[in-house]
Length: 323
Image (cartoon, rainbow, N blue to C red):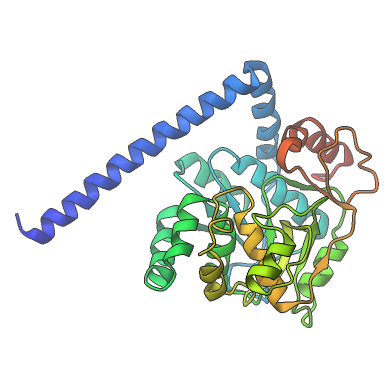
């Protein structure tokens, strides 16, 4: 056997082992989730999430066409929520922005089939494709950025969305967001040619790896407060990878928390200025039993995530968003 053939065989074997490990890990994670919720709650959640599969497909413009593109990150455990998020946005807004879905971790044939059925024009970016392209683009010059991305999947929102985008403006949507009414404000900003600044949801408090005062003292950057990237719009040129590599030298910034990409987004936005926030009817709240009538959308972040199933999805159905 030649050395090239031996290398190819080794790579194939390693990939097969990794694929098997990832499948086992997903089953283990699913089991732990069911144990935490309890079987009855887990079944209720699965049944509620699966209701989206009875709705009609949504057609959009194909990727690579137009000045606006929507990017969403999901994995096997939350892709059904991602379908809810996308369909409520597109059905209430009547937008036709191209959709790019980034698939973190391992996937299944059923997951891919469902995403393509419900969004026939979607562009799907798998983990292997993403890893290879990002490595080619950054491995030599930005090792800390690559390492941060490896340790925190949330970093894919910062890195991969910018690398794979073909449009001038990127709309970011998290899988734990639901829309109830037409997002006029969001669509106006995304589709205005002069909108070169960033539009974010406003967090109840700043949730970063460092404080605004530390950002000023360490980097000379006036980091905007309370940036949340669950729903946002930013120009493709926003993410300064050289800046990210520099600030990631600081151990607090590169700490692999759930806020690392949000910290870097805020630092990049701070160097540009012109940051705007969505109005309060794009809600982020941990509270149960809020009044949904005045809301355009709600981001069910953090400990409010169970309310996505218990309150948000039933309200979407009651409002007749799906017709």
